[in-house]
Image 1: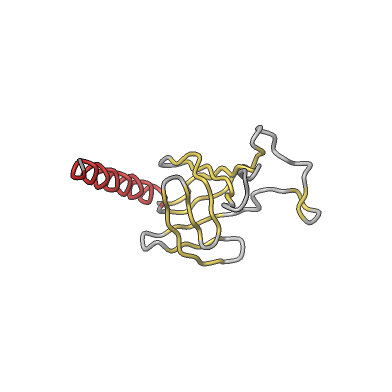
Image 2: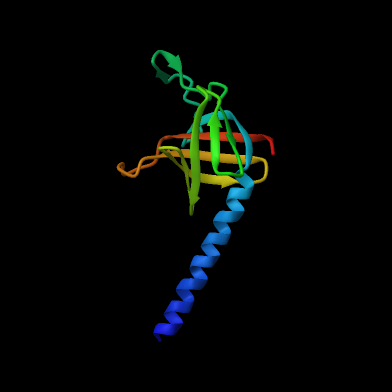
Length: 128
């Protein structure tokens, strides 16, 4: 029985690792934020952050195969990783809601909070 449990555990670990590898391959490239919305679909145009509308602000995230990345906003450089549906970009954590060859949808995630961020960011891939 212990052998069977060990085999199942090893197989599950290998499968999860393969899924993360596939996600990492899809993530490599530059992603441009083109839309930010509330979880109910509203754009949040009437909400402000420091007196400015809360928007994508021409945000582009570039992710390399060596697990490093940059952010266009301030030239921020970071290491990134993925675990299940969580994307770690430096010290920030996001939930991956959708990841396809040309589309990425992220939500901010704080493990110390009970719920996800109300904002959803949609990205399109601009370079591989």
